[in-house]
Length: 335
Ligand SMILES: [Zn+2]
Image: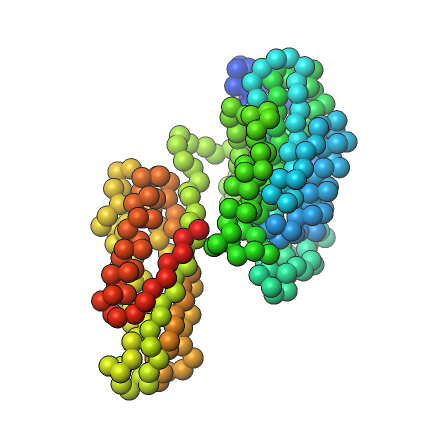
């Protein structure tokens, strides 16, 4: 991570009324760089799962306070808001970072490698910042430190948004309670009400991209992500006489195939792209028994609200008609 260059490139985007980048940005970023890297390594070493970011939240609050930034908490359990009023009048803008890690074991041989464990959906697991949210949190703290140190030069208010559970919650069913976590819950809890930002900036690090550069484009750059859960109920029977039961495995095979037509035959691809993937399928225990039930989990991605809405509308219809044709029942959850 090259904090110096990243922030240098970042700030003109934020203060787009300024034509040239002021020297104070370079100087302050240089001064904050070592501390920011230390923060990133600490957060990396002690990762916490979604909706469980208690220590990360405490660290963020402590840091923001030490920069002289007003700290607000109580948003989506562990979410933190920092408010920095510049010395000059101007608009309200927000910068956002995510805080949570993933249920993955770290194998990298770095001195700050994670050895942490946590409970994910009731099961103990290793925890790792494998998506870069450690860097995001540290970078936003770095930006907060730089801006707070120069608030006499800032026209307007900067809101720093530290969002938990971007990867979903470790402790709740994300399908039925997805509005109880993360960004949606922060908004419901009033995180962006007073002051209300006119614009918000977020970013994501990406392995493989050259360090020190920002990549951007017009329109959506990150796709929407809707989680998909499908339960197919049939009737168990010996595999030698399928006519006496109702086969959820055969029906599921048809469903997986036909789901692909949502993008290839129905979506208006001049408006954007869409992807429907089934990433998990579970059903049955042995080769000669047709089981009662098959469970599938998948994801829906799109960079166009039109394409997304079309998929969300037609997907249950395709599954229900496939179920009806095979005399099985299907339950579809999208969250
Ligand atoms: Zn991520």
